[in-house]
Image (cartoon, rainbow, N blue to C red; front, top):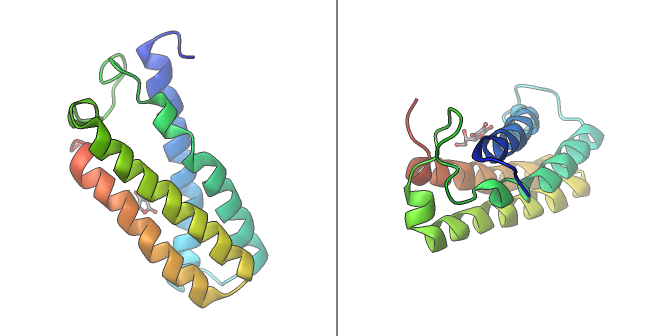
Length: 130
Ligand code: ASC
């Protein structure tokens, strides 16, 4: 699937970068820093849901090196724990997508809380400091 570790690193970083952009726009709405636009929120959540499934495919063995990246060795040493953390993120994002489709700001706020926690949990355990 990836020719070299660098390709996997770039792929997952690209997915995370675009996810973060759309999560950020949803976060701004959830926090009242941007006006709530139900249609835009549903579109952002849809994009995030599609992207949420991609990074896990790109944490291939040996891709801790090959290009600058912040993946900790625990991703591979504690693979079941990493998979569980990834699955929680995917699950939280699926719920976010459902919440965004309801058009309710309160539903969006609640779902964003869980998404943010799932981002942070994985970063705390599996992402190295800069
Ligand atoms: C974001 C983003 C993250 C998470 C994290 C939540 O918008 O880019 O990495 O939320 O900050 O704690």
